Image 1 (cartoon, rainbow, N blue to C red):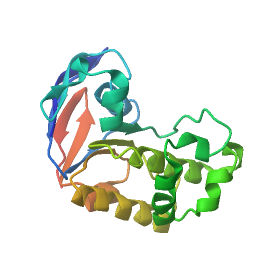
Image 2: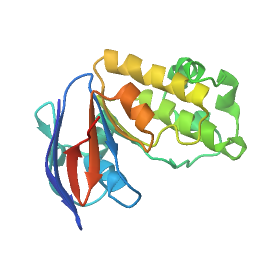
Image 3: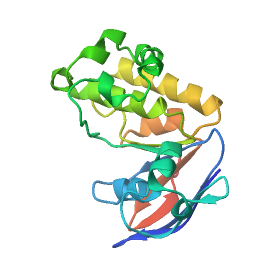
Length: 198
């Protein structure tokens, strides 16, 4: 499904990786090791060398917005550009089931962004990405602000997407989460990706 061929930016890389349908690959590593840089390269958000290829289609051959709908990046702290939650969804009818599965009521669509806690912002940013029905999710610490019970709710939603064939690259500092979610665990160290010993 997704092939990364020698992605490189500044001192980071080159990174090569294959992700199949319905696979979750976790990436662990220390702060500053380049985990977020790698996700941003895959999402084509920063200039870089190398290629990302989805289902045989090269990223550079597609308009950036089209690529980012198929390969959706959810940052650790996502941006919010409008006043209310509902304004951030192209089709607000798709949001309530996703929100409910993550423990947020539909009334939150009317809330101002300023009212949201950090954890609510994390979950709603993920809902926003899922509503686009991407082929691949690039998740940067998606549950770092959540308690354990809410983290498990989010993981259940992600597992359902894996069952549907969505691929996930999950950056996490939580080895237990990597163990629960990932079919392969990688570590980013010294500018290189390597299989994580389990």
